[in-house]
View 1: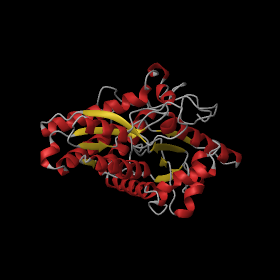
View 2: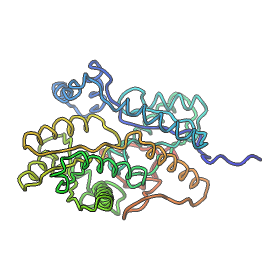
View 3: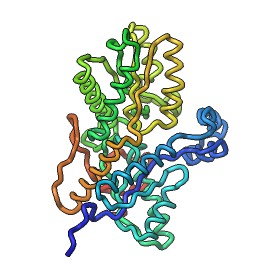
View 4: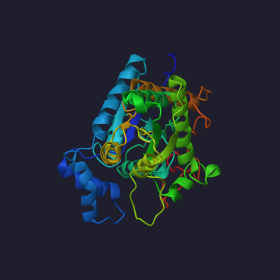
Length: 375
């Protein structure tokens, strides 16, 4: 009998992402997909859409996912991992349901899922699981045999995610004028979310101020800052800050905002800042507009030298980390006890989201969790 494949029981990997418009005519329909069910006026969507029109209506996220898809396929092939990799989006083509349908028709029955969100939160984890459940319900209604889908664990503290960010910070520091380099502060940025969503992120046992969302980001920021200190011999002060706030003005969201933080640092006499977007897998619209455009303009207004370090994107080390996560989960599903690679104080995240983890905004089924109707 031939040896069992190292990827068994999985017969495919699905790259699951947010999606984005690829031309001016796509912008409003895309934003309607993103905000469906929230009653957002069309005029408000046009206001939000102006960010995209600055870039000819094209979000960079789809091109970046194509690059990551290529990197994953290349890494798998180079390392003898015979596993097809497909891609589906939450809000734009290629849509998740269409991709999943094609995978099922191709005979895929056990699918590992990598979401392009590294941290625990409703929008970064459970909502993707709800999207998977919606897609499975559609396929079930079409009479198709449903596959089992397993979402890979959070990878915020995997070395293949952390080390490229360290190198990016080192390169950004080196790009600053020498006379301000040693005094530069590190502003670790991530997407702001409502404080109520942050407080209930992750398993119930960790609910409280900031929940798993804040704790995980702080752990990564500390890892990067410590690695930079070890490499340079300089201890750069750092803080976790937020960007891309939206929603009603009266709803509390995580703070401080990056632009407010830059003003504060300037007032304190800080000579330079490196903005480090640890909350983002790739340089998508929130990075290009909120950091490269808006925050960089604020820094120029203040006369504050600033650099923005790169996200992980399609870095080969990240592709190798995904391979590691797939093989780790496959071994676990086969009843083995593989080494779980993770840095920092929090250790490797759970494989299966427990009941009460990142609770839903409204009662709604979610796949790939302990409460999944699609076990």
